[in-house]
Length: 310
Image 1 (cartoon, one colour):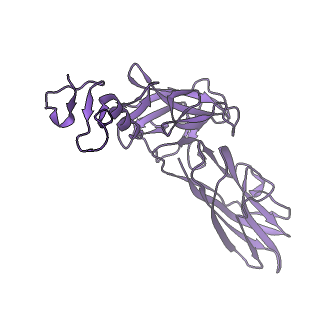
Image 2 (cartoon, rainbow, N blue to C red):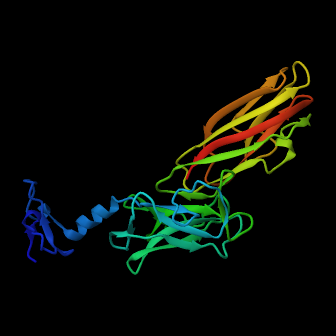
């Protein structure tokens, strides 16, 4: 069709990408810069559409409520809407999508993977890239028109990342192991670990009840949000002036981190607590419940709780 002002189009008009639309409300400039092609307008609109889905371990459930462990399939499921904009090497294209899945068969134990969305025959497809180790990307993230993409291949849009558990070929999303990190449409994901086994301690900082399993684990694909953490404990000091401490160790079991701890002196069944927000860093991390006694102290109960955005 010939050049037309957008106000000249009718319901039956079918514009093509090379058509020029006149910007009729802009009195300045020259005729050349008062026009824009349909392709340029579509590209500008597509860039502004944020992906509407979420990475999840349960088909059809974009935000899981129940704990999911040992999941062998990752899904990208519509959440806020069912559209995503992807770069085709020249311009951005907005396409609708249905739930997509990615098998984790053969994925390496204790390694993160970035998850990318890309166009395959005009529809959304998923692929992944393994990291070097638990905290280091092998392939960096880059920007295309302000959107995160794979360095060296802007047709791969970053959707998030996952961490493969120690068994390999599977991952978890539970209150103790948050291993799915969404970049878009993040929501608060609960963290919780508690133990009420009474035990007596006369040593320096160590894991609660000398148990390395008393921790929560998180995976951070892009560090933009802090963790929100609380620690609580109950103890019976043996005598006046005796202190007991319960705290959290970030990636450590024999010390306390971020001054996140509480103490008590000369009180029976003393309860204490503390809370804080903190950045633990990119990649995989654990937050261990740790304890310290200045002399003979009976510890009765401890808990770490909070949330991570993912």
